[in-house]
Image (cartoon, rainbow over all chains, first blue to last red):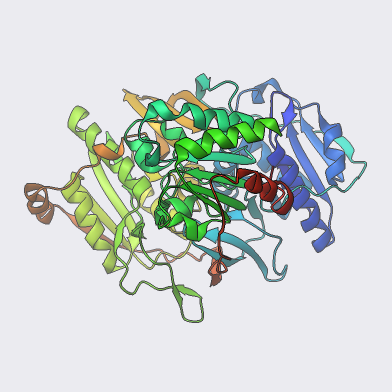
Length: 315
Length: 248
Protein backbone atom coordinates (compact mmCIF):
# COMPACT_ATOMS: atom_id res chain seq x y z
CA UNK A 1 0.00 0.00 0.00
CA UNK A 2 1.17 3.49 -0.78
CA UNK A 3 -0.27 6.91 -1.53
CA UNK A 4 0.35 8.58 -4.89
CA UNK A 5 -0.40 12.27 -5.48
CA UNK A 6 -0.82 13.73 -8.95
CA UNK A 7 0.90 17.11 -8.89
CA UNK A 8 -0.58 19.38 -11.51
CA UNK A 9 1.67 22.03 -13.00
CA UNK A 10 1.36 24.81 -15.52
CA UNK A 11 4.20 26.77 -17.13
CA UNK A 12 6.74 24.80 -15.08
CA UNK A 13 5.10 25.80 -11.78
CA UNK A 14 2.98 23.67 -9.50
CA UNK A 15 -0.54 24.85 -8.85
CA UNK A 16 -1.48 25.73 -5.29
CA UNK A 17 -4.00 22.91 -5.43
CA UNK A 18 -1.13 20.49 -6.12
CA UNK A 19 0.50 21.48 -2.81
CA UNK A 20 -2.86 21.02 -1.08
CA UNK A 21 -3.29 17.56 -2.67
CA UNK A 22 0.21 16.65 -1.48
CA UNK A 23 -0.52 17.95 2.05
CA UNK A 24 -3.59 15.70 2.06
CA UNK A 25 -1.65 12.75 0.63
CA UNK A 26 1.03 13.09 3.30
CA UNK A 27 -1.53 13.23 6.13
CA UNK A 28 -3.35 10.20 4.69
CA UNK A 29 -0.10 8.25 4.32
CA UNK A 30 0.76 9.03 7.96
CA UNK A 31 -2.66 7.88 9.05
CA UNK A 32 -2.25 4.63 7.10
CA UNK A 33 1.41 4.30 8.04
CA UNK A 34 2.61 4.09 4.43
CA UNK A 35 4.81 6.17 2.08
CA UNK A 36 3.63 9.03 -0.12
CA UNK A 37 4.97 9.74 -3.60
CA UNK A 38 4.19 12.56 -5.97
CA UNK A 39 4.00 12.23 -9.72
CA UNK A 40 4.98 15.13 -11.95
CA UNK A 41 4.81 15.71 -15.70
CA UNK A 42 7.68 17.76 -17.13
CA UNK A 43 7.98 20.20 -14.21
CA UNK A 44 11.45 20.95 -12.91
CA UNK A 45 10.35 22.79 -9.76
CA UNK A 46 10.37 19.63 -7.58
CA UNK A 47 12.33 21.40 -4.82
CA UNK A 48 9.19 23.31 -3.89
CA UNK A 49 7.50 19.98 -3.10
CA UNK A 50 9.87 18.99 -0.31
CA UNK A 51 8.07 21.32 2.05
CA UNK A 52 4.89 19.28 1.84
CA UNK A 53 6.22 15.93 2.92
CA UNK A 54 6.65 13.71 -0.16
CA UNK A 55 8.92 10.69 0.34
CA UNK A 56 9.55 10.41 -3.37
CA UNK A 57 8.96 12.52 -6.45
CA UNK A 58 8.48 10.63 -9.69
CA UNK A 59 8.99 12.76 -12.79
CA UNK A 60 7.81 11.88 -16.26
CA UNK A 61 9.97 13.85 -18.69
CA UNK A 62 8.50 13.47 -22.10
CA UNK A 63 7.53 15.97 -24.79
CA UNK A 64 4.48 13.79 -25.43
CA UNK A 65 2.96 15.34 -22.27
CA UNK A 66 3.62 18.98 -23.06
CA UNK A 67 0.05 19.25 -24.25
CA UNK A 68 -2.65 18.09 -21.85
CA UNK A 69 -4.45 14.94 -22.90
CA UNK A 70 -6.70 13.24 -20.41
CA UNK A 71 -6.16 9.92 -22.17
CA UNK A 72 -2.36 10.12 -22.28
CA UNK A 73 -2.10 11.45 -18.74
CA UNK A 74 -4.49 8.83 -17.39
CA UNK A 75 -2.64 5.99 -19.09
CA UNK A 76 0.69 7.30 -17.83
CA UNK A 77 -0.68 7.56 -14.29
CA UNK A 78 -2.09 4.04 -14.52
CA UNK A 79 1.42 2.78 -15.29
CA UNK A 80 2.90 4.62 -12.31
CA UNK A 81 0.10 3.32 -10.06
CA UNK A 82 0.88 -0.26 -11.07
CA UNK A 83 4.61 0.16 -10.74
CA UNK A 84 4.29 1.82 -7.31
CA UNK A 85 1.60 -0.57 -6.16
CA UNK A 86 -0.43 2.44 -5.02
CA UNK A 87 -3.60 1.91 -3.01
CA UNK A 88 -4.70 5.54 -2.95
CA UNK A 89 -4.38 8.21 -5.62
CA UNK A 90 -4.93 11.83 -4.63
CA UNK A 91 -5.98 14.52 -7.08
CA UNK A 92 -7.01 18.13 -6.68
CA UNK A 93 -10.38 19.46 -7.84
CA UNK A 94 -9.11 21.50 -10.77
CA UNK A 95 -10.85 21.08 -14.12
CA UNK A 96 -8.02 18.94 -15.49
CA UNK A 97 -7.65 16.83 -12.35
CA UNK A 98 -11.38 16.02 -12.29
CA UNK A 99 -11.14 15.21 -15.98
CA UNK A 100 -8.28 12.79 -15.30
CA UNK A 101 -9.92 11.35 -12.17
CA UNK A 102 -12.99 10.18 -14.06
CA UNK A 103 -11.04 8.91 -17.07
CA UNK A 104 -8.41 7.15 -14.96
CA UNK A 105 -11.12 5.40 -12.93
CA UNK A 106 -12.57 3.98 -16.14
CA UNK A 107 -9.17 2.80 -17.32
CA UNK A 108 -8.33 1.26 -13.93
CA UNK A 109 -11.81 -0.22 -13.38
CA UNK A 110 -12.27 1.51 -10.07
CA UNK A 111 -14.17 4.40 -8.56
CA UNK A 112 -13.36 8.03 -7.92
CA UNK A 113 -14.74 10.11 -5.11
CA UNK A 114 -14.43 13.83 -5.75
CA UNK A 115 -15.28 16.85 -3.57
CA UNK A 116 -13.63 15.22 -0.55
CA UNK A 117 -13.24 17.71 2.27
CA UNK A 118 -11.39 15.85 5.01
CA UNK A 119 -9.17 12.90 5.86
CA UNK A 120 -10.97 9.53 6.04
CA UNK A 121 -13.06 9.04 9.18
CA UNK A 122 -11.78 5.48 9.22
CA UNK A 123 -9.34 3.46 7.10
CA UNK A 124 -10.97 0.08 7.55
CA UNK A 125 -13.65 0.41 6.26
CA UNK A 126 -12.39 3.37 4.21
CA UNK A 127 -14.88 6.19 4.78
CA UNK A 128 -14.36 9.71 3.45
CA UNK A 129 -16.46 12.83 3.85
CA UNK A 130 -17.52 14.61 0.68
CA UNK A 131 -19.99 17.29 -0.26
CA UNK A 132 -23.10 16.36 -2.24
CA UNK A 133 -26.34 17.94 -3.41
CA UNK A 134 -24.17 20.83 -4.54
CA UNK A 135 -22.97 21.68 -1.05
CA UNK A 136 -26.41 21.42 0.55
CA UNK A 137 -25.25 18.29 2.39
CA UNK A 138 -22.29 16.05 3.19
CA UNK A 139 -21.95 12.31 2.84
CA UNK A 140 -19.77 9.86 4.71
CA UNK A 141 -18.93 7.62 1.79
CA UNK A 142 -17.44 4.17 1.99
CA UNK A 143 -15.03 3.26 -0.81
CA UNK A 144 -14.94 -0.48 -1.46
CA UNK A 145 -12.35 -0.94 -4.22
CA UNK A 146 -8.69 -1.92 -3.77
CA UNK A 147 -7.57 1.16 -5.64
CA UNK A 148 -9.14 4.38 -4.38
CA UNK A 149 -9.00 7.62 -6.32
CA UNK A 150 -9.76 10.69 -4.22
CA UNK A 151 -10.33 14.26 -5.40
CA UNK A 152 -9.69 16.84 -2.68
CA UNK A 153 -11.95 19.89 -2.75
CA UNK A 154 -9.99 23.17 -3.08
CA UNK A 155 -9.24 25.07 0.13
CA UNK A 156 -10.83 22.32 2.24
CA UNK A 157 -7.67 20.80 3.66
CA UNK A 158 -5.22 23.66 3.29
CA UNK A 159 -1.45 23.58 2.98
CA UNK A 160 0.41 21.76 5.71
CA UNK A 161 4.16 22.12 5.78
CA UNK A 162 6.07 19.00 6.59
CA UNK A 163 9.71 19.11 5.44
CA UNK A 164 10.90 15.86 3.94
CA UNK A 165 13.90 15.38 1.70
CA UNK A 166 12.16 13.52 -1.07
CA UNK A 167 14.13 11.18 -3.31
CA UNK A 168 13.86 11.92 -7.01
CA UNK A 169 13.14 9.39 -9.70
CA UNK A 170 12.27 9.52 -13.36
CA UNK A 171 9.72 7.23 -14.94
CA UNK A 172 9.59 6.10 -18.55
CA UNK A 173 6.10 5.82 -19.87
CA UNK A 174 4.93 3.34 -22.43
CA UNK A 175 3.08 5.58 -24.85
CA UNK A 176 -0.51 5.27 -25.90
CA UNK A 177 -1.76 6.60 -29.19
CA UNK A 178 -4.45 9.26 -29.29
CA UNK A 179 -6.06 10.87 -32.31
CA UNK A 180 -7.15 13.78 -30.15
CA UNK A 181 -5.17 16.99 -30.50
CA UNK A 182 -5.51 20.51 -29.19
CA UNK A 183 -6.12 23.15 -31.85
CA UNK A 184 -6.04 26.22 -29.65
CA UNK A 185 -6.28 27.46 -26.10
CA UNK A 186 -7.90 30.79 -25.38
CA UNK A 187 -7.16 32.28 -21.98
CA UNK A 188 -8.11 35.53 -20.45
CA UNK A 189 -4.82 37.11 -19.54
CA UNK A 190 -4.03 38.84 -16.32
CA UNK A 191 -7.19 37.98 -14.45
CA UNK A 192 -7.42 35.52 -11.57
CA UNK A 193 -9.54 32.44 -12.30
CA UNK A 194 -12.42 31.45 -10.03
CA UNK A 195 -10.94 27.99 -9.45
CA UNK A 196 -7.57 29.34 -8.32
CA UNK A 197 -8.78 32.38 -6.40
CA UNK A 198 -8.59 32.82 -2.63
CA UNK A 199 -11.07 35.68 -2.91
CA UNK A 200 -14.02 35.92 -5.29
CA UNK A 201 -16.02 39.11 -5.89
CA UNK A 202 -19.39 38.31 -7.37
CA UNK A 203 -22.25 40.52 -8.52
CA UNK A 204 -25.84 40.07 -9.56
CA UNK A 205 -28.84 41.77 -11.08
CA UNK A 206 -28.64 44.49 -8.44
CA UNK A 207 -25.91 46.05 -10.57
CA UNK A 208 -28.62 47.01 -13.11
CA UNK A 209 -26.49 46.56 -16.25
CA UNK A 210 -23.18 45.32 -17.68
CA UNK A 211 -21.88 48.90 -17.89
CA UNK A 212 -21.67 48.99 -14.10
CA UNK A 213 -19.14 46.18 -13.73
CA UNK A 214 -16.11 48.44 -13.68
CA UNK A 215 -16.33 48.94 -9.92
CA UNK A 216 -16.64 45.16 -9.44
CA UNK A 217 -13.47 44.63 -11.45
CA UNK A 218 -11.69 47.39 -9.55
CA UNK A 219 -12.70 45.85 -6.22
CA UNK A 220 -11.49 42.45 -7.44
CA UNK A 221 -8.18 43.94 -8.62
CA UNK A 222 -7.70 45.68 -5.28
CA UNK A 223 -8.13 42.38 -3.45
CA UNK A 224 -6.36 40.19 -6.01
CA UNK A 225 -9.69 38.44 -6.47
CA UNK A 226 -11.51 36.71 -9.30
CA UNK A 227 -14.81 38.10 -10.58
CA UNK A 228 -17.97 36.01 -10.75
CA UNK A 229 -21.67 36.54 -11.32
CA UNK A 230 -25.12 35.09 -10.65
CA UNK A 231 -27.09 33.02 -13.14
CA UNK A 232 -29.49 35.73 -14.42
CA UNK A 233 -26.54 37.98 -15.14
CA UNK A 234 -24.87 35.33 -17.31
CA UNK A 235 -28.20 34.34 -18.91
CA UNK A 236 -28.81 37.96 -19.94
CA UNK A 237 -25.34 38.07 -21.44
CA UNK A 238 -24.06 40.82 -19.13
CA UNK A 239 -21.11 38.61 -18.21
CA UNK A 240 -19.56 35.50 -19.78
CA UNK A 241 -20.79 32.02 -18.77
CA UNK A 242 -17.41 31.21 -17.35
CA UNK A 243 -18.22 33.65 -14.52
CA UNK A 244 -21.56 32.05 -13.60
CA UNK A 245 -21.33 30.47 -10.16
CA UNK A 246 -24.05 28.37 -8.57
CA UNK A 247 -25.67 25.01 -8.88
CA UNK A 248 -25.60 24.84 -12.68
CA UNK A 249 -22.51 27.02 -12.99
CA UNK A 250 -19.15 26.82 -11.33
CA UNK A 251 -18.73 25.86 -7.71
CA UNK A 252 -16.76 28.27 -5.55
CA UNK A 253 -14.75 27.25 -2.55
CA UNK A 254 -12.73 30.37 -1.92
CA UNK A 255 -11.62 31.70 1.46
CA UNK A 256 -13.65 34.87 0.98
CA UNK A 257 -16.73 35.35 -1.19
CA UNK A 258 -18.15 38.84 -1.58
CA UNK A 259 -21.66 38.97 -3.07
CA UNK A 260 -22.89 42.31 -4.36
CA UNK A 261 -26.49 42.82 -5.43
CA UNK A 262 -27.20 39.09 -5.36
CA UNK A 263 -30.40 38.13 -3.53
CA UNK A 264 -29.19 34.61 -2.74
CA UNK A 265 -31.46 32.10 -4.47
CA UNK A 266 -31.09 28.58 -3.12
CA UNK A 267 -29.30 27.47 -6.33
CA UNK A 268 -26.76 30.26 -6.01
CA UNK A 269 -26.13 29.56 -2.33
CA UNK A 270 -25.59 25.89 -3.11
CA UNK A 271 -22.77 26.70 -5.49
CA UNK A 272 -20.89 28.99 -3.14
CA UNK A 273 -21.65 27.35 0.19
CA UNK A 274 -18.24 25.79 0.64
CA UNK A 275 -16.58 29.21 0.61
CA UNK A 276 -15.28 29.94 4.10
CA UNK A 277 -16.30 33.53 4.72
CA UNK A 278 -19.19 35.23 2.96
CA UNK A 279 -19.82 38.96 2.79
CA UNK A 280 -23.08 40.28 1.38
CA UNK A 281 -23.71 43.81 0.16
CA UNK A 282 -27.36 44.37 -0.72
CA UNK A 283 -29.87 47.20 -0.34
CA UNK A 284 -32.66 44.77 0.56
CA UNK A 285 -32.38 43.76 4.23
CA UNK A 286 -34.79 40.88 3.48
CA UNK A 287 -32.46 39.34 0.84
CA UNK A 288 -32.14 35.64 1.72
CA UNK A 289 -28.38 35.85 1.25
CA UNK A 290 -28.03 37.63 4.62
CA UNK A 291 -29.09 34.39 6.34
CA UNK A 292 -26.17 32.56 4.74
CA UNK A 293 -23.61 35.34 5.22
CA UNK A 294 -20.99 35.93 7.88
CA UNK A 295 -20.85 39.69 7.37
CA UNK A 296 -23.32 41.98 5.71
CA UNK A 297 -23.80 45.57 4.67
CA UNK A 298 -27.35 46.75 4.02
CA UNK A 299 -26.79 49.56 1.57
CA UNK A 300 -26.67 50.74 -2.00
CA UNK A 301 -23.94 48.88 -3.89
CA UNK A 302 -23.23 52.00 -5.96
CA UNK A 303 -22.23 53.82 -2.78
CA UNK A 304 -20.80 50.98 -0.69
CA UNK A 305 -18.51 49.43 -3.32
CA UNK A 306 -16.64 52.63 -4.34
CA UNK A 307 -16.24 53.56 -0.66
CA UNK A 308 -14.93 50.09 0.11
CA UNK A 309 -12.43 50.28 -2.76
CA UNK A 310 -11.19 53.64 -1.47
CA UNK A 311 -10.72 52.33 2.05
CA UNK A 312 -9.00 49.16 0.88
CA UNK A 313 -6.63 51.15 -1.30
CA UNK A 314 -5.82 53.49 1.60
CA UNK A 315 -4.90 50.54 3.78
CA UNK B 1 -25.16 9.14 -36.80
CA UNK B 2 -26.27 7.42 -33.61
CA UNK B 3 -26.33 9.54 -30.49
CA UNK B 4 -26.91 8.25 -26.97
CA UNK B 5 -27.85 10.79 -24.30
CA UNK B 6 -27.56 9.47 -20.75
CA UNK B 7 -30.12 11.03 -18.46
CA UNK B 8 -30.08 11.31 -14.70
CA UNK B 9 -33.26 11.82 -12.71
CA UNK B 10 -32.46 14.47 -10.08
CA UNK B 11 -34.34 16.51 -7.46
CA UNK B 12 -35.45 19.91 -8.73
CA UNK B 13 -32.92 22.66 -7.97
CA UNK B 14 -35.23 24.25 -5.39
CA UNK B 15 -35.80 21.01 -3.45
CA UNK B 16 -35.31 20.90 0.28
CA UNK B 17 -32.60 18.38 1.00
CA UNK B 18 -33.55 16.02 3.84
CA UNK B 19 -32.63 12.47 4.76
CA UNK B 20 -34.45 9.46 6.19
CA UNK B 21 -33.66 5.98 7.56
CA UNK B 22 -31.15 7.19 10.08
CA UNK B 23 -29.74 9.74 7.61
CA UNK B 24 -28.71 7.02 5.17
CA UNK B 25 -31.14 7.84 2.39
CA UNK B 26 -32.33 10.93 0.54
CA UNK B 27 -35.89 11.88 1.47
CA UNK B 28 -37.73 11.94 -1.86
CA UNK B 29 -41.05 12.68 -0.18
CA UNK B 30 -42.67 15.61 -1.96
CA UNK B 31 -39.63 16.14 -4.17
CA UNK B 32 -40.16 16.97 -7.81
CA UNK B 33 -37.71 15.19 -10.12
CA UNK B 34 -36.28 16.80 -13.25
CA UNK B 35 -33.86 15.98 -16.05
CA UNK B 36 -30.40 16.76 -14.69
CA UNK B 37 -29.73 20.27 -16.09
CA UNK B 38 -26.31 19.33 -17.52
CA UNK B 39 -27.94 16.38 -19.31
CA UNK B 40 -30.67 18.61 -20.69
CA UNK B 41 -28.13 20.92 -22.34
CA UNK B 42 -26.68 17.81 -24.00
CA UNK B 43 -30.10 16.49 -25.04
CA UNK B 44 -30.97 19.82 -26.66
CA UNK B 45 -27.71 19.73 -28.63
CA UNK B 46 -28.48 16.15 -29.73
CA UNK B 47 -31.95 17.19 -30.93
CA UNK B 48 -30.36 20.03 -32.92
CA UNK B 49 -27.98 17.55 -34.54
CA UNK B 50 -30.98 15.39 -35.41
CA UNK B 51 -32.71 18.37 -37.00
CA UNK B 52 -29.65 19.47 -39.00
CA UNK B 53 -28.04 16.13 -39.94
CA UNK B 54 -30.73 13.54 -39.35
CA UNK B 55 -28.98 11.94 -36.38
CA UNK B 56 -30.75 9.28 -34.38
CA UNK B 57 -31.19 10.21 -30.73
CA UNK B 58 -31.64 7.60 -28.00
CA UNK B 59 -32.02 8.61 -24.36
CA UNK B 60 -31.15 6.21 -21.59
CA UNK B 61 -31.52 6.19 -17.86
CA UNK B 62 -30.61 3.68 -15.19
CA UNK B 63 -33.44 3.67 -12.70
CA UNK B 64 -36.72 2.28 -11.49
CA UNK B 65 -40.19 2.86 -12.93
CA UNK B 66 -40.40 6.35 -11.45
CA UNK B 67 -37.68 7.51 -13.88
CA UNK B 68 -39.97 6.97 -16.87
CA UNK B 69 -41.66 10.36 -16.41
CA UNK B 70 -38.48 12.20 -17.37
CA UNK B 71 -37.78 9.75 -20.22
CA UNK B 72 -41.19 10.62 -21.67
CA UNK B 73 -40.27 14.27 -21.34
CA UNK B 74 -37.02 13.60 -23.25
CA UNK B 75 -39.07 11.96 -26.01
CA UNK B 76 -41.39 14.97 -26.08
CA UNK B 77 -38.34 17.24 -26.37
CA UNK B 78 -37.33 15.34 -29.48
CA UNK B 79 -35.47 12.08 -28.73
CA UNK B 80 -36.47 9.16 -30.98
CA UNK B 81 -36.27 6.34 -28.52
CA UNK B 82 -35.86 5.79 -24.78
CA UNK B 83 -34.27 2.99 -22.81
CA UNK B 84 -34.58 2.36 -19.11
CA UNK B 85 -32.20 -0.07 -17.53
CA UNK B 86 -34.28 -1.46 -14.75
CA UNK B 87 -32.60 -1.14 -11.38
CA UNK B 88 -32.20 1.37 -8.62
CA UNK B 89 -29.14 3.44 -9.51
CA UNK B 90 -26.61 3.08 -6.71
CA UNK B 91 -23.25 4.59 -7.63
CA UNK B 92 -21.58 6.04 -10.73
CA UNK B 93 -19.49 2.92 -11.29
CA UNK B 94 -22.42 0.52 -11.47
CA UNK B 95 -24.44 2.98 -13.57
CA UNK B 96 -21.57 3.38 -16.04
CA UNK B 97 -21.13 -0.40 -16.24
CA UNK B 98 -24.84 -0.81 -17.00
CA UNK B 99 -24.62 1.81 -19.77
CA UNK B 100 -21.46 0.16 -21.11
CA UNK B 101 -23.28 -3.19 -21.32
CA UNK B 102 -25.94 -1.52 -23.47
CA UNK B 103 -23.24 0.11 -25.65
CA UNK B 104 -21.81 -3.35 -26.33
CA UNK B 105 -25.11 -4.32 -27.98
CA UNK B 106 -25.77 -1.06 -29.83
CA UNK B 107 -22.95 1.11 -31.05
CA UNK B 108 -23.04 4.89 -30.82
CA UNK B 109 -20.93 7.52 -32.54
CA UNK B 110 -21.51 10.02 -29.79
CA UNK B 111 -22.39 9.50 -26.14
CA UNK B 112 -23.51 12.58 -24.23
CA UNK B 113 -23.65 12.64 -20.43
CA UNK B 114 -24.04 15.70 -18.26
CA UNK B 115 -20.74 16.97 -16.87
CA UNK B 116 -22.06 16.03 -13.44
CA UNK B 117 -25.41 15.44 -11.81
CA UNK B 118 -26.65 18.10 -9.44
CA UNK B 119 -27.39 15.53 -6.70
CA UNK B 120 -24.16 13.60 -6.14
CA UNK B 121 -21.89 15.89 -8.22
CA UNK B 122 -19.44 13.08 -8.91
CA UNK B 123 -18.83 13.92 -12.58
CA UNK B 124 -17.75 10.34 -13.00
CA UNK B 125 -20.08 8.59 -15.44
CA UNK B 126 -18.78 10.11 -18.72
CA UNK B 127 -15.13 9.46 -17.80
CA UNK B 128 -15.83 5.90 -16.69
CA UNK B 129 -17.67 5.21 -19.94
CA UNK B 130 -14.85 6.66 -22.03
CA UNK B 131 -12.36 4.55 -20.09
CA UNK B 132 -14.42 1.34 -20.30
CA UNK B 133 -15.15 1.76 -24.03
CA UNK B 134 -11.79 3.32 -24.94
CA UNK B 135 -13.57 6.21 -26.67
CA UNK B 136 -12.28 9.75 -26.89
CA UNK B 137 -13.49 11.96 -24.07
CA UNK B 138 -14.10 15.67 -23.61
CA UNK B 139 -15.76 16.92 -20.45
CA UNK B 140 -17.00 20.42 -19.51
CA UNK B 141 -17.88 20.57 -23.20
CA UNK B 142 -19.16 23.98 -24.37
CA UNK B 143 -19.21 23.49 -28.14
CA UNK B 144 -19.31 20.53 -30.49
CA UNK B 145 -19.22 20.14 -34.28
CA UNK B 146 -19.11 16.80 -36.00
CA UNK B 147 -18.19 16.56 -39.68
CA UNK B 148 -18.07 13.08 -41.06
CA UNK B 149 -15.95 11.20 -38.48
CA UNK B 150 -14.15 14.23 -37.10
CA UNK B 151 -15.33 16.06 -33.98
CA UNK B 152 -14.24 19.53 -32.95
CA UNK B 153 -14.99 20.32 -29.31
CA UNK B 154 -14.34 23.15 -26.93
CA UNK B 155 -14.11 22.59 -23.22
CA UNK B 156 -13.99 25.04 -20.37
CA UNK B 157 -10.63 25.08 -18.66
CA UNK B 158 -9.42 27.14 -15.73
CA UNK B 159 -9.57 30.72 -17.05
CA UNK B 160 -10.50 30.00 -20.64
CA UNK B 161 -11.40 27.43 -23.26
CA UNK B 162 -9.50 24.74 -25.09
CA UNK B 163 -10.48 23.64 -28.59
CA UNK B 164 -9.51 20.16 -29.70
CA UNK B 165 -10.34 17.75 -32.47
CA UNK B 166 -10.59 13.99 -32.52
CA UNK B 167 -12.21 11.08 -34.28
CA UNK B 168 -15.56 9.68 -33.20
CA UNK B 169 -16.68 7.64 -31.28
CA UNK B 170 -16.62 10.21 -28.56
CA UNK B 171 -18.00 10.70 -25.06
CA UNK B 172 -18.71 14.26 -23.94
CA UNK B 173 -19.61 15.73 -20.56
CA UNK B 174 -22.13 18.43 -21.47
CA UNK B 175 -22.82 21.65 -19.63
CA UNK B 176 -24.31 25.11 -20.15
CA UNK B 177 -22.66 26.74 -23.15
CA UNK B 178 -23.11 23.71 -25.39
CA UNK B 179 -26.54 25.29 -25.80
CA UNK B 180 -27.86 28.28 -23.86
CA UNK B 181 -30.48 28.21 -21.15
CA UNK B 182 -32.86 30.01 -23.54
CA UNK B 183 -32.34 27.26 -26.15
CA UNK B 184 -33.83 24.53 -23.93
CA UNK B 185 -36.84 23.01 -25.64
CA UNK B 186 -40.16 23.18 -23.81
CA UNK B 187 -42.26 20.30 -25.13
CA UNK B 188 -45.40 21.40 -26.99
CA UNK B 189 -48.65 19.45 -27.15
CA UNK B 190 -47.67 17.80 -30.44
CA UNK B 191 -44.35 16.69 -28.95
CA UNK B 192 -46.09 15.29 -25.89
CA UNK B 193 -48.62 13.40 -28.04
CA UNK B 194 -45.87 12.03 -30.28
CA UNK B 195 -43.83 10.95 -27.27
CA UNK B 196 -46.61 8.52 -26.34
CA UNK B 197 -46.08 6.66 -29.61
CA UNK B 198 -42.30 6.50 -29.37
CA UNK B 199 -40.62 3.34 -28.06
CA UNK B 200 -39.61 3.14 -24.41
CA UNK B 201 -37.72 -0.05 -23.93
CA UNK B 202 -37.08 -1.57 -20.51
CA UNK B 203 -33.88 -3.59 -20.29
CA UNK B 204 -32.93 -5.95 -17.48
CA UNK B 205 -29.99 -4.75 -15.40
CA UNK B 206 -26.72 -6.63 -14.96
CA UNK B 207 -26.90 -5.81 -11.26
CA UNK B 208 -23.34 -4.70 -10.87
CA UNK B 209 -21.98 -4.14 -7.40
CA UNK B 210 -21.38 -0.56 -6.34
CA UNK B 211 -17.88 0.60 -5.47
CA UNK B 212 -18.97 3.37 -3.17
CA UNK B 213 -21.79 3.55 -0.65
CA UNK B 214 -23.19 6.63 1.04
CA UNK B 215 -23.23 5.51 4.65
CA UNK B 216 -24.56 8.60 6.29
CA UNK B 217 -25.61 12.05 5.20
CA UNK B 218 -25.11 15.19 7.24
CA UNK B 219 -26.54 18.64 6.82
CA UNK B 220 -24.35 21.70 7.29
CA UNK B 221 -24.43 23.11 10.80
CA UNK B 222 -26.72 26.02 11.33
CA UNK B 223 -25.00 29.26 10.59
CA UNK B 224 -24.41 31.84 13.24
CA UNK B 225 -26.17 35.14 12.77
CA UNK B 226 -24.76 37.53 10.18
CA UNK B 227 -22.77 40.46 11.57
CA UNK B 228 -24.13 43.63 10.01
CA UNK B 229 -21.94 46.65 9.39
CA UNK B 230 -23.41 50.07 8.61
CA UNK B 231 -22.61 51.41 5.12
CA UNK B 232 -20.79 54.39 6.63
CA UNK B 233 -18.63 52.19 8.89
CA UNK B 234 -16.78 50.19 6.28
CA UNK B 235 -13.53 50.44 8.24
CA UNK B 236 -15.18 48.09 10.67
CA UNK B 237 -15.87 45.58 7.88
CA UNK B 238 -12.24 45.71 6.75
CA UNK B 239 -11.11 45.26 10.34
CA UNK B 240 -13.38 42.21 10.77
CA UNK B 241 -12.15 40.61 7.55
CA UNK B 242 -8.56 41.33 8.45
CA UNK B 243 -8.47 40.49 12.13
CA UNK B 244 -11.46 38.30 12.93
CA UNK B 245 -11.94 36.24 9.76
CA UNK B 246 -8.30 36.69 8.67
CA UNK B 247 -9.13 36.44 4.99
CA UNK B 248 -7.60 39.63 3.59
